[in-house]
Image (tube, rainbow, N blue to C red; front, side, top):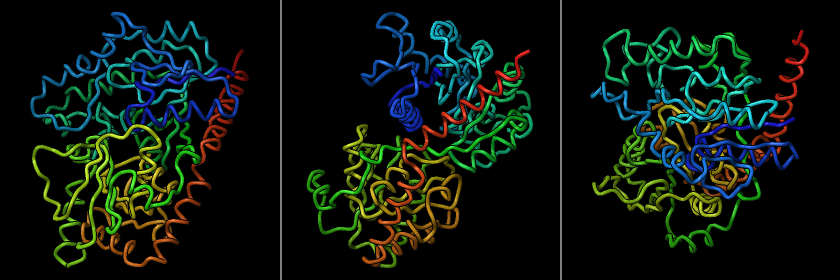
Length: 421
């Protein structure tokens, strides 16, 4: 069985990292796998990208070109919105590789045109890393549920017209994907329910397979050593917050963390607390969180990331909407208790008061209470840390994820073979 993964990138970004980890996991259990990307950052020979020529230069320009239709909506929000209108080079390449099955991952930024899926001529498994596949262009719908019908009047576009860009994109998807041999995989139960309620995927099989992680790379380490390496204070309680664009993407919830930390300061519980931020450098405009902050910038390698998790006493993920964040899995694997709102895929990861704390959605005082509950008792903190690592070993081992995918691929291929006349 030959498997081809499609992903915009192999490393850059959480979804790309998850796809590449699966690729490595499949190789680890001796499955035949290749990965096709728009931008390649690894030195993996099994990752295919445009050669260094005009096509590769054009690949770098595709995200900006793909976003051109948004110019018609000057009031669109800051969230990611993908149109996927650019023609691509993927289907001829796939025909050359002749895979038995294609596993699509995050394939936006102009990488995969909507109409290309019908040209691949083989069974498709689509691993959803967000909501884009079944919406009219947004990656997270926030409070909007129009994807369950027909989109239009899109709040993220700032549109009040029923037939707008979002409805046009959803209609393109419905027309292009009508007769596909397509199965859906979601990493979280929340995203599975969203897919099942959508107008596009309600009739398709939806499988839940959590992300996998290399538990040898992400593991508990001596906190004092980690802090020494990263030049962090030894005598403080350190909260870690990490996200790409951590200080600019409102969905990641820094404003809610800010309110929670300000509440801790008001009630006198913040004297020993400092904050680590990974995924952003110190901004030009000061963010007042009432406590000292350490900006570690963008850490893309596993060793640096695992050191950051090990250095922290607690990891906080205050997102307003999220699938199954790699960051929380990584923190759990490093034995770092986690605090988040009880939204999205967080309940799949955090067992309330077992390996962390699930706060009531968007109640910042409860988020603050969760932080103090984790930090206030050293013996309890150690129990939470042990349970975090055990959860990762039990549910998020890379080999377990890869084996579940291979079993699904075999099931789909057997069904396809039996359906042949």
